Image (cartoon, rainbow, N blue to C red):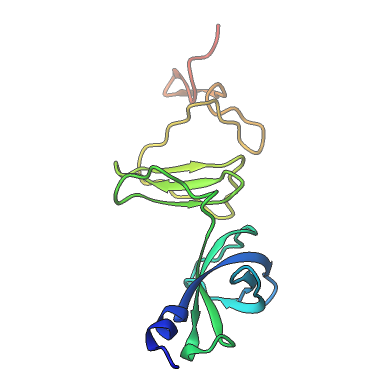
Length: 165
């Protein structure tokens, strides 16, 4: 006998990610739907402007389009083991399983944690900049202790810290 409640419950289900094909226009997943059933080629829809390659064993929410198990899509994929925890209400974070983190904090600051940050563009700073460590430019110039003595109208001046004696 047809059970409409059971059919509705089956429209959305949980699955476990077993493999990912990230070479196609839409990411394809191999999902374990239950103790027995594994399905391949399941499209993983992602938000515009954002993409990720979730680790294996991530959890997925899967929907049956048109009520057909042959027409599944993964709506959300989450790795609970790697999720950033203890955010304050309203904060958000972008993270990876490798420890990199961009966190938009309650006090208005954005915190970036990474082994190395590479920026491939011009930078314009409209505010104060503070270096906690002594920055060195790509040309090997120390920005704190590098100086140029010069005179302006006969008065000795420096472009950096006081000239050492």
